[in-house]
Image (cartoon, rainbow, N blue to C red):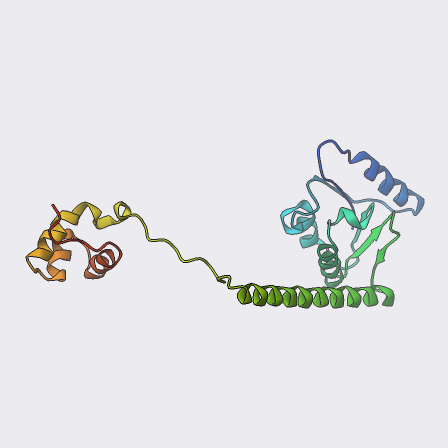
Length: 205
């Protein structure tokens, strides 16, 4: 199967230029396009959430995807590399017109795939190293790391807030927490958590 893939990033752009280029390219080489995939979406959007992702899920050995240029697949190098590696794993070919790029089962494609994978791994390591260095610098500057501590919920948001007067009165009479929890219709643990978060004055009205 031969697929023509066309992507534009906004409604103001037209798919006709890309369709014309692909159709002319195939006509000169005696190829017939079996299906067209057209979409208007940003190339920064994950390919799995685009029509391209659906296409990649169904291509297989010997299939061919033709597009105007590599940038139609994605707007950053690593997304494009991921897509090309997926195509290689599925033994699907990718040809581009403007870049004159050919991904197939030849040795050149395998070398390129290795280079792509190596570049991606190097970049991941560099990102990890930069992250560690940035965290170390922030820690040295006295900046608290990690998620900020959550604030306590306002007392009125607790289930037992409506029973606060009863609970305070029972505490004043030195009733057990189990007895108080039963009167409020909750578990002893729920009562304990409420008292820990919202300490009550036994003399409350």
